[in-house]
Amino acid sequence: MSLGFERVLTAIQPEIVFSIGNFGIANSTLMIALIAILFLWIGLYNVRKFTIVPGTFQSIVEMIYESILGLVQQITGSRDHAEKIFPVIATILVYFAVANVIGLLPGLTDITYKGIAVLRTPTSDFNTVLGVSLAAVIALNIVSMREYGFFGYLNNYFNIKGIINGFKKGMTEGFVGLIEFFVGLLDIIGEVAKIVSLSFRLFGNVYAGQVLAIIIMGSFAYILPAVWAIMSGFTGLLQGMVFAALVAVYYTLSLKPIEDITKND
Image 1 (cartoon, rainbow, N blue to C red):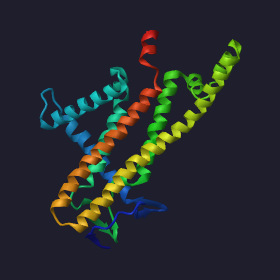
Image 2: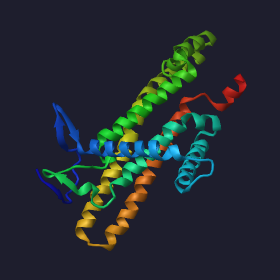
Image 3: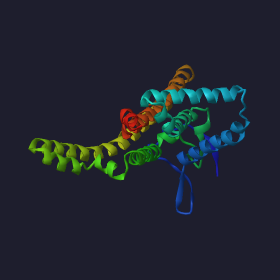
Image 4: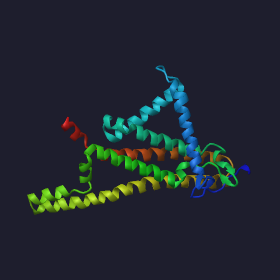
């Protein structure tokens, strides 16, 4: 057994640090566990101490809360919609922000065990971003099903009722119904495309940033790596925000328009 510090080019696939039975534990999984423990500690130890008169840490948390809620409200155009989706969007945004930045801590991702990096930025592992993207799209479809009802939800993709009612009105309306039916089928492909676009966008940017950072830090000694580290941190925050904003947009599209809700009330 040997522990050491070294910097090598990040492999595109996660590396297995150790195994429990037949289940391999990757270095990206260990970093996720570290982040989860960090969030758990903040939630159990610090949040319990929040008071009416906020301290420094509580003020920062409240500022982040208001900023994210304001961002989501601007995207959805509705305070009610924003409050419904806030827990999901805030979780994604804060998690990705921490996951993208934590790897910049000096020495953290350089710790090795038997020549393998013990910790790896989670978002540089495609399995992580794919899992979050898949979960987000599934959650959005569940929300849409609750909003429209089961049959109303299916009607968004298989608008057979529109075809029948269209041909009852005439041939032109019937063919319009057929076109809408095929457009609905294309929307199914669009749901899969959401998963692909969300995951590849975040993974590509984060992984490319890590590779460039390692190359630059290996070529220059002091000044340029520091500048690049700051840029990588900013880019990581920005990519997490873009991911969360896109999920919020998809969420808004899965709900009934605000005008329809107002009419029903």
